[in-house]
Amino acid sequence: MHLLRGIVVHGFGLACALAMASLPARAGSVRVSGDTITFDGRIDRTSAAQFLQLLQDPQVTRLVITSRGGLVDPALDMAEAIHERQLDVEVPADCLSSCANYIFPAARRKRLGWPGAVAWHGNMTHVLYLQQTGQAAWSDERMADARRLARREAAFFQRIGVDGFICWFGKIAPYDAEAFYYLSPSDMEKFGVRDVTLETAQAPEPGPEGLRQVAVEGDARGIPRPFVRLDD
Image 1 (cartoon, helix red, strand yellow):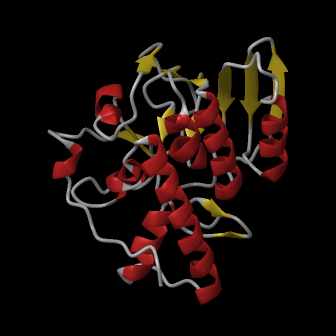
Image 2 (cartoon, helix red, strand yellow; image 1 turned 135 degrees about the vertical axis):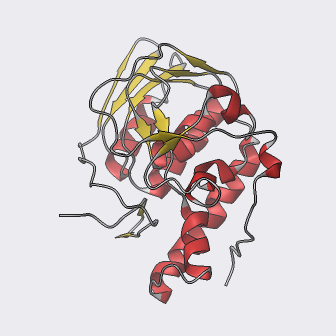
């Protein structure tokens, strides 16, 4: 059975035009040891609250995360705290969807276990784009929440100095990635995601279905960028 295609929005599942097999949802496990918080599984209100509680320890300087995403609001709560504390983030296996959109770019220094460890498939601005271009038709109630979240993520990206287009440019022409896409560290830097190091070129199994690399030629500002209204 296919899940709604895309990222999860607070209070409902909202599609993000993603033709992909459903990803397993693993309950979040959060623990601290020394200076490191280890987060494994789904990002939701419970796991995010556990993370924020552990982050009160002043010794914590690093987050090791394996997550295929989750709810937008809790992920942004975590990301804002990560940026404020200037934590380093390590991704040994995978950091997808809301994890890639918000958690990863919020970090000071970032370490990838393999090239496709962090991968994107759209964000809330992408959801608005799909609705505004007639590629999707969701209820007014759902779109009101989507607009709220899109405004929140836009403010977050502005605050951390990252171009939020990184989350969805690969889903549209000329790239048209059908599922998840990933970038080289040098291409991430074109969107403001800096200080990324790669541990190994070897991919673990199994990786996300349909994962592909997108290469950016020249400056990211040269990529065709649709106008998206964040308000009504």
